[in-house]
Length: 125
Image (cartoon, rainbow, N blue to C red; front, side, top):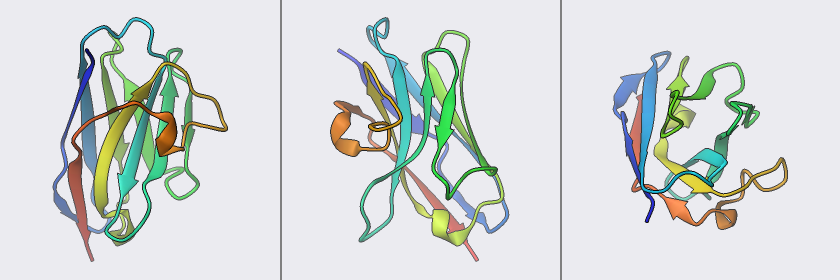
């Protein structure tokens, strides 16, 4: 059984920074795709960033140059460093896990079978 737990969400002012964490537990040996999603009220859940087992990463255009996804040496915790935050970054942020991703599926919520409970990020103007 795999469990994902997000933390690090908070309320910050525009231009500020936050570092989100996603801690995993359970048998992670065969999972090679960790993705951060976000969902704002009234909007669809969208992929923010993806990291593979080799540390390669992909970002949504809206966060490129501002957000950085990384993982620890044990590959059981994934981070999302968010800089230059904007009010439009306000959302519930979720981490998601699957066995496999590629450029076509990494941002599709329906591809993922494992989700955390989310952590709220609010950016005030």
